[in-house]
Image (tube, rainbow over all chains, first blue to last red; front, side):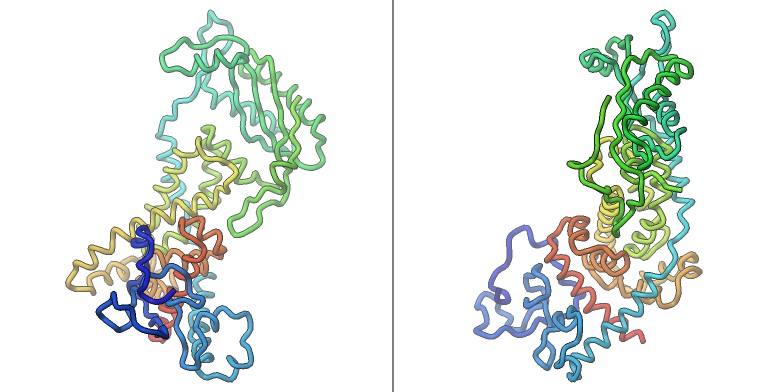
Length: 263
Length: 181
């Protein structure tokens, strides 16, 4: 693409980075475009196309492009002997020393921010579902969040087990939908629990699922006082060292292959 | 002692588990504060940006699809918030007839003076010469080690555009830091 011949698609405008750049677009061979009255190469020529071989690049006096010199893995024979290339690499080397020091800087202490965030979060009321407790005559209710907390903690009392999603809902889906309507009749009736687990490899799925179902049935009856008639336990991940990559937290295997067993 | 994954904690937080969300905030706030400080050049502004980003994340977590990594998602929220702040700053600076007015604000931050080395401060000052977009791409690549692909995702631009911005940022900074020496 020649300099100045194409103003680019309409959406390009706000993304253009031309301010403050010191790069001097190299002269493109061939006639100047008539559309631009100023014949000097303009620093804000349309450009979001990257450095390599584009007008954004800068041609050194030896004819090499700056981006090629900077992005090469190893300096080649020309670069090693060329004063212009060496100067360009020295400039990058100076910058690299700053980068190394900046990267090594300790992370700022974040306790204050964490505390402020959690104060705000706790002050926000997130209305959740209310679930029935005990007998109809009791008219007692518990927030789903509170019931889920008990069931997760119950599952996590086992070694090498973390509880993820935990939904507690009416057995009949239609009743569940009605009970979600604001001001609608609150559903009373048998409930089911759907719990997802991450477990260490030394558990077998059937063994763990059966044990967790028993523990949750006990907790629902004794600790919560809730009529739970169905408990679905899924093991969705294996507990392991899976914190890899710059942005971390890739699952150890894909969704297609993960083991998912329900009762 | 193994720890629960971000993915698991994000699912729980999305279901209203505040303790799970607090674990996520503890785990990521240092890194995000680093990022915001490097993008904004001010610790106080960075703390506000990160705080707002987490509160916004808490509200949006019920709709968050756990197939995206929580940290990428937070990088995106924080980066976008910082970009908006930087873009909003620029007209004010352009209108100012005395450009030196912006300098004391940097020098005045005691936290910054106490905890940054001279080299890091010099780099931070040079970063002010970049456009917000160049700054974001360069900082994510060089200081946070993100790949071009990850940066493209965080900033919603093509990988090619990311390469271009990083090259121009590098070109500018190499010159700026050389002059400082």
